Image 1 (cartoon, rainbow, N blue to C red):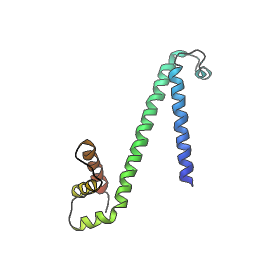
Image 2 (cartoon, helix red, strand yellow):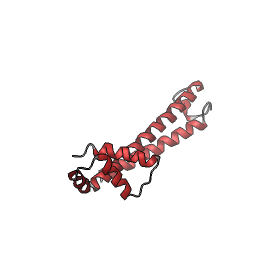
Image 3 (cartoon, rainbow, N blue to C red):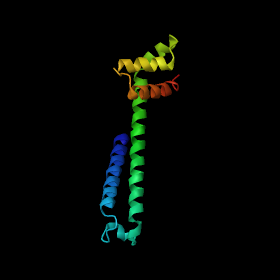
Length: 127
């Protein structure tokens, strides 16, 4: 229940932040902008807008990174018995990661190498 409420609050914040950023982008230097209620001088508009846009890109980056890491953790948690079985057979983390990726149908390439590195990193934390 609380997870769903937190998620709704988070995405409401993101949508509001994006709307504010877009509004600022289209009203840089506008003497009738709503920003005039807070800052009278229009010379700061560009800096404020760039700060909002940059912070929005950081929020987006970290949100996607957190989701991606959660997906890898869930993949390992769902296959923990298989991983322990392979470790008993003396498989390395690289071999286990490659086995999981093959089972998922992953082919060679940038995404495959990236996923293998991430899986090895998370597998090193599994006991």
